[in-house]
Image 1: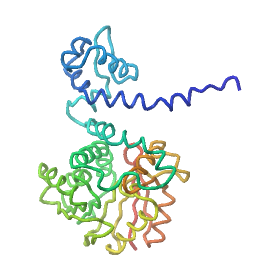
Image 2 (image 1 turned 60 degrees about the vertical axis):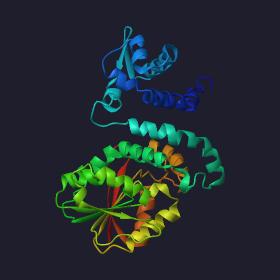
Image 3 (image 1 turned 90 degrees about the vertical axis):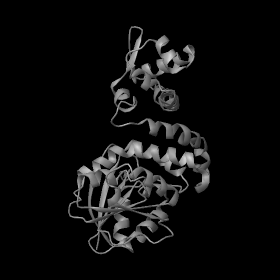
Image 4 (image 1 turned 90 degrees about the horizontal axis):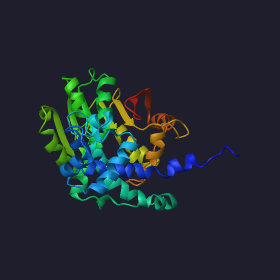
Length: 328
């Protein structure tokens, strides 16, 4: 046993240090400032308006983690920071970091309570309007790759009317409608979310092709008349009994041949891969719905109970994947 060290434990236990350093670096605009060009610490201090001594702590941490690079006394963004965190155009993960820093990070202090009790820790009304905006922008940022992968991976051409159930700001619909000009779409979500979606969609060329319907998919009628339904990142928000109830409610409003597209962090049978999905189960548990992650096998079993035929399982982006079922 002399070759056994505590290093794996220490690496995991200190993971929050790296995360919080990254959140702070993004919040103070470090990566935007470095996008202006390689800079010394003194130059960054002037640009950021942060005390030199404490800014050095942040910059050194980002350098140690490989997010920032240093040549002599000048710092610059690494390739990942330049691409996703500098605000230079293209994919922008800053809203996601802001969401995890301001909303998720404090809530994880209550994970032990949630694990011990399996009770709702944060209620449905726990988000203010500003927090809801942070949440929507963060989710949209981190799921952008998945949304585009779905539009590129699944052939929507045979479909005419598409329903996005719990579709948020429409971030999944926009790349699909951009690629498939024959589609008309409906976005169904809660009133508080729908108002943000209207503002977002008004800035796109697809506003006229998307009908907004407000409601709660557990209480209100689910819109009918669609031949394809997207349920993206919704199943993981609920325990298994409610997830199955939602699918049964969907089954009651679809006709034979309707395709149901479930985008989520589908796992292996032991819920241990993808690793990110296994860790995210804690995040989902802390949502108002007390959620979880589920395996492909569990979903296939639900399909059989409802009377749907499992069609296929496809990878999308990162840990997300697509399950396709068809109503029989």
